[in-house]
Length: 74
Image (cartoon, rainbow, N blue to C red; front, top):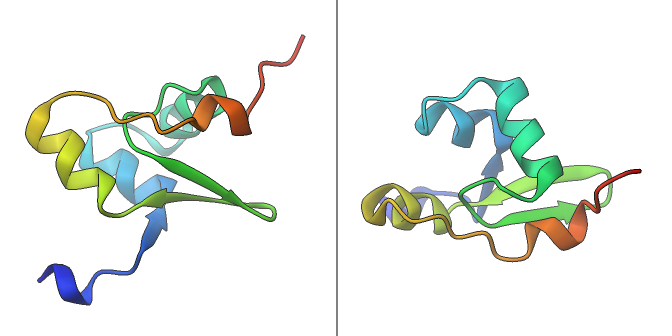
């Protein structure tokens, strides 16, 4: 099944896997606290697909520097 997965997925889909709303998912991304690795590609924000099952299985977040892509605004 993994072979058919894309390399990245939407924040909304990943949020749903964690039982979060889309808005809460994007809020966590903005704060650098989303439990999966997040990539900023142009104006798009994507979740690294391989990070999702690892975070779900282990129960431990895998931040991967998301906070660097979204600095806290003053």
